[in-house]
Structures are given as structure tokens and as C-alpha cells.
Image 1 (cartoon, rainbow, N blue to C red):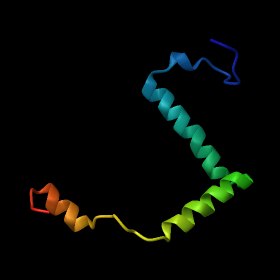
Image 2 (tube, rainbow, N blue to C red):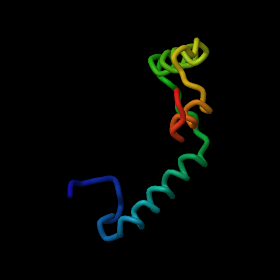
Image 3 (cartoon, helix red, strand yellow):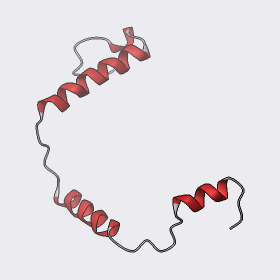
Length: 75
């Protein structure tokens, strides 16, 4: 195993234990409330997706129609 910043051998733990360790580490990041700034490209992509979500919904099928078709109803 290559040198890492992890101060212990993670391979000594089972997969569920390693997942729990990852979760605990992730929770400390979430709890930190540190804001990670977006790049200009990320901000532009979020804006593009938002504007797209406000657009027309042509070609979409209502949920009730999807359920009816899945149940074997006619089109």
C-alpha cells in the first residue's frame, strides 16, 4: 500500500467498519459548516440547470399516465 495521510492501516477493518469510519469523517466535514466556494464554471452550470428547469415540459408524461400504462392500461 502506498504512503497515505491515514495514520492507521484501514485494511485491518472490515468493509462495514471502513464505511462507518468514512461516515464519521464525512460527518465532521458537514459539521464544520465550512463553505466551499464554487468555481465560475460550477456556478454557470448551476444557473444553466436552474433556467432549464423553468422551461417548457413538452414531451413529458404525467405521473398518473405512467402508472396507468404500467398497470396495463391503453395509451
